[in-house]
Image 1: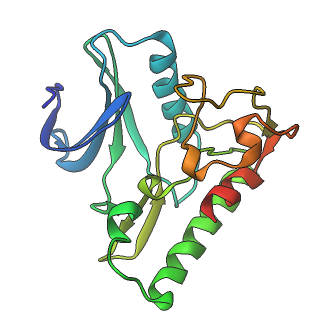
Image 2 (image 1 turned 120 degrees about the vertical axis):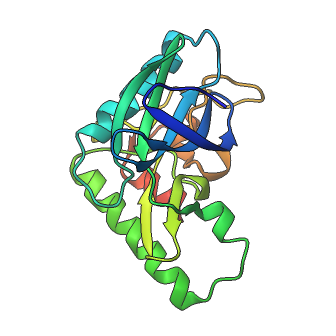
Image 3 (image 1 turned 90 degrees about the horizontal axis):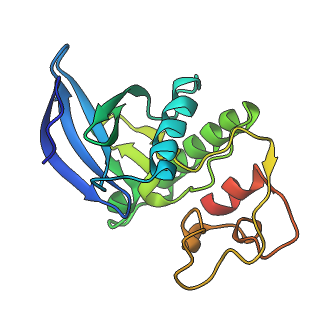
Length: 199
């Protein structure tokens, strides 16, 4: 577990390729929090920039359907992103159980509404997948998280030929990625890439 002054880390949630996710409490006001910290002891400038970009995008977005940021704290040789905790689980964990259409449809509508609001700003998420959708089954709240590769542009371009086995330039999750995001199509990436991934 990590140690972060001003925060009490209570549990470990996920170990990812570049980051790890923890659950905890902010000591100042006892608010539940999620901490996203870089894994590397010596993170690259790109990894630090991604975390800072995520914080900046989230800090400037007034949309009820996204996880809110509380702060970006210095942690060892990098940073830790402090986020609100709605007490939910990722959609990837929730859908392991069978859902009826009446239970699934409000979730899908909430995600589509959130994407519509983001696209008006204009922000493209570029990594819509079940593990980036948080659901609190008790309250019915649905939130979108992980804006590490999001763009503040109306459209962007992917570099042709980016996708390949072991390619480190690929940004996003291949299983949910739109064809234009792979760079193998002569098309710009716009808001439709998020809806493709959601589908």
